[in-house]
Figure 1 (tube, rainbow, N blue to C red):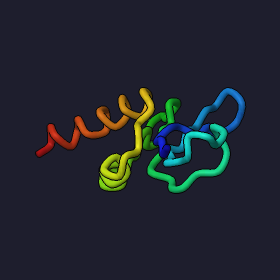
Figure 2 (cartoon, rainbow, N blue to C red):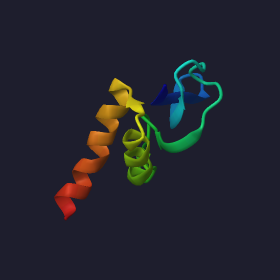
Figure 3 (cartoon, rainbow, N blue to C red):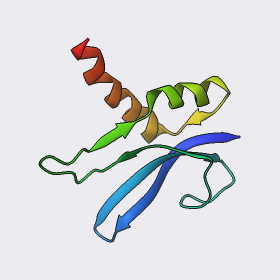
Figure 4 (cartoon, rainbow, N blue to C red):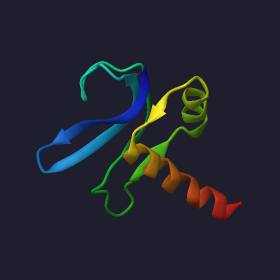
Length: 86
């Protein structure tokens, strides 16, 4: 089963996460099918904290991929400003 989840990167004490589509049997930071965005929980100033390719998320969920709980929250958060601006 394909799952969309976070893959950790960055240094110790300075986390950075890639949002990836991967097979559920692969390790957290292992092989992935496609990178769909990133999440930087410690972004400051002009740094971008969250970027999500919404069209690719919709594609993967359309073919049966499942979102992890955290990614589901981040996708909802990413779509909020877009809905408010429109």
